[in-house]
Length: 100
Image 1 (cartoon, rainbow, N blue to C red):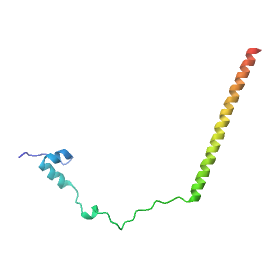
Image 2 (image 1 turned 90 degrees about the vertical axis):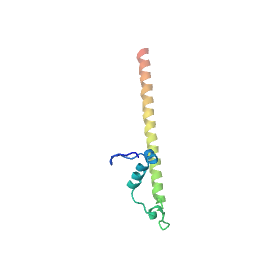
Image 3 (image 1 turned 180 degrees about the horizontal axis):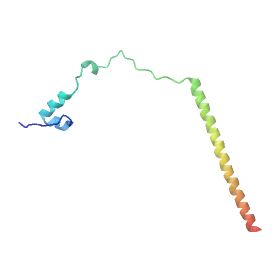
Image 4 (image 1 turned 45 degrees about the horizontal axis):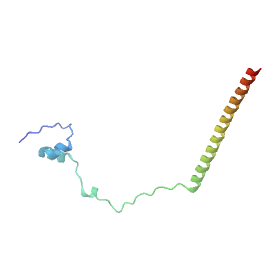
């Protein structure tokens, strides 16, 4: 018979518990007590239904996001237009400086 020495702080690996009968007994003894009632699912419990947001709140959120998107597009368009104007003006000034 092989003497098994294992520390209480050292976890028992599942492979050793399968191979060694002494470690299997030790592993089973360290498991918490289980009652059959905890394993059974009670049919009395009802699953909570997810709450649906109100249609008004969803419509307001949609309108707000559409308005925010439109404002963002106007801002980006204005910035690109300004960049194009500055680039075109710089080219015209460059050509005018070279020509005259």
